[in-house]
Amino acid sequence: MTMSFNPFVLFQYKMFEGFEKKGQVYFVQQTFERARDHFSGAAGYYLLTHYEHLSHAQTHQSAVRNDPSSKLYHLYNEDDKQMLKELLAPSSNNSVYAALIADPRWDEKAKQLFKPAIQKWVQINTNWNMSRESVLPVKFDMIFGELFIYLKWGKEEKRIKLVEMEKMNA
Image 1 (cartoon, rainbow, N blue to C red):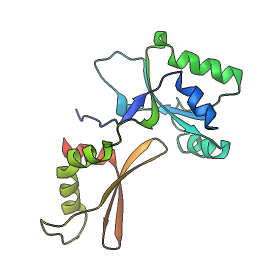
Image 2: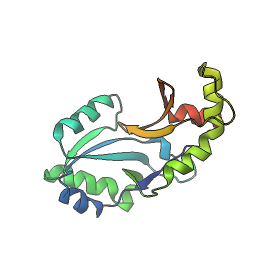
Image 3: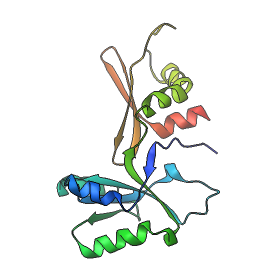
Image 4: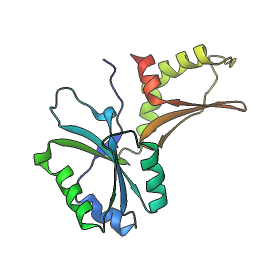
């Protein structure tokens, strides 16, 4: 079993107030397998991603349209607000995460955690001639709820799903 790296924070209903103050009133829900804990007994694992603009939220939802759990919520819609309350209620037994990262050093920790997998991936999948002293720029990003690693060497750049690196780390 491959262990998933999850830098995201558990969503709490009180967070909506802060999002609303920033004008981020649209939320996309999707299944979040990265958070699955086979021992927790949670009913579902979800990620809520916040947006200020409806069009951005719609683009995200369109990207995850095959996910049966995907939903688009608007904080000013009372039905949506009620569904979010139910989703986040302790009695729902769901694990819901916000697309927020609390640890400001999470990317440094991830670089260390995935360093062997990154080296292995580069050896197998590129023809980059790197010495042992070479420093490979590594960046992380999230696109529609999926974590990616960006590697750049010279003019070449590679984007790899973090889940692929996790498989190499196994």
